[in-house]
Amino acid sequence: MNNAATTSTAPANAGAVPAPHAKQVFAAIDIGASSGRVMLGRVCPSTGATLETVHRFPNGVVELDGGLHWDFDALFAEVLKGLAAAASVAAAKGERIASIGIDTWAVDYGLVNSSGELVSVPFSYRDERSRSTVSRVHAAIPPEKLYATTGLQFLQFNTVYQLAAEAVLDGLQALLIPDLIAFLLTGVRRTEATNASTTGLFDAVSGQWATEFLDALGLSRDIFPPLIQPGETVGTLLPAIREQTGLPEDTVVVAVGSHDTASAVAAVPALDQDFAYISSGTWSLVGVELDAPVLTEASRTANFTNERGVDGTIRYLRNVGGLWLLSECQRTWAAQGFSQSLPALLDAAAALPPGGPQINADDPTFTAPDNMPERIRAAVRHNGDVLADRPAAVVRCIMDSLAAGYARTLADAERLTGRSTSVVHIVGGGSQNRLLCQLTADATGKPVIAGPVEATALGNVLVQARAAGVVTGGLAELRSLVASGTELVRYEIGRQSPVTV
Image (cartoon, rainbow, N blue to C red; front, side, top):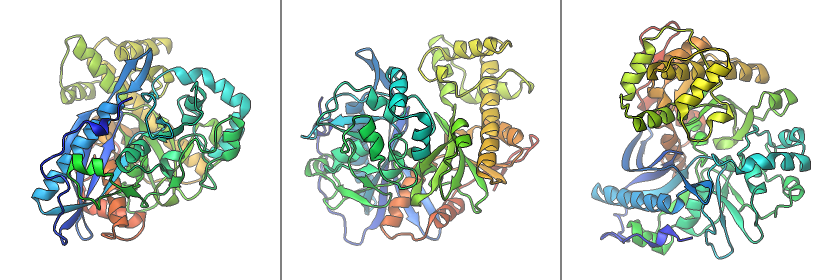
């Protein structure tokens, strides 16, 4: 397939060299399953970090040859546009972009041959192809053994099941999406560790590839590039990329928590250790931060995951359904001619009485795009209940279901780890959803602190800034910068008005 990196036009300031004492700023490429953005981050040890969005672009799955794929050529072209915009903005302000960090969603990958060519359009995890491979993988590696080594939550779209669906892998390497972008920018192949931990082929204790599983599945031990840790340098930009973006020749790509949840959790503004977090967006990632994985059978049957975080921490969490349910409902309603704004929908939902019907928000039947309102009503009917055919009722069902799912998951996390938590931090897009935040406080019986919205980009930028020596310290120090520089909102139990903290 075509390499989008060859199609852009060089800006007039291509290869411009900033003043030697220009202030360092950091470019964050932050791409989710529905949209992406390139942001400039400015970090001051005394006042915290600020972000400036220089380019936003849509992202989404496309149907191609009967499967669901990512339009990667278009995605990478937007990345280049964003970097060119970042170079222009920084140059106009007399700043120097010291590095670039990349984070995206997990598990998906592109296959690259020995010449560095992307040989096919990357599949989306929402495609059904891996459903049929689960039994084959488990026949080679029993699920109990898989979990005892990887500590990874079972999801049918985990990378290990996707790779089992590939017809041809000989001579190819799998680059996870942020690693693929980094490769096209630098020519260097690496696999960042926080994202590697989502593949189902990564040893949760040793922090290395589980080579015995690669062997058992007939996969090459070189199927993935070597590992790299957050804060380490991937490489400098290729000459063609510098020409197309206008970035100077010493611009480097630095590995960050390339799984977007890893970056988001790094920016949770917690001042104490007894916190729980919810990274709320397309998906909801609900859990606690640990020093070591929990690999018990009880943890496996509860379907918790042990994914790597920044600084070798463990993100002990479970995927719960997310705001994908709401956005898909909005898409369906818009196609039907109903275009009420999201704030109006949430206000109407908040006005409904509590105790309405609920669904299992993380049921796999909600994974693929389709008529989401009808699927939600069908799930309610299956539970023996009735959901009114009104958007407000559907939205309230989603919000109640998410909050209840959060509460169950946090209770399970405390039980399985033996830890208690005193506060829940909600970061990401869901932190702006006042109804969801209040319902979560009520359902969990814990205060909720909402914000920052851009936690993922902040975590990305702060890891870069630390690598550049602009800030020092561990996660506690990085989080204190977020807390001091972000307006946060606190929700107490009992539907009181939230307060700014």
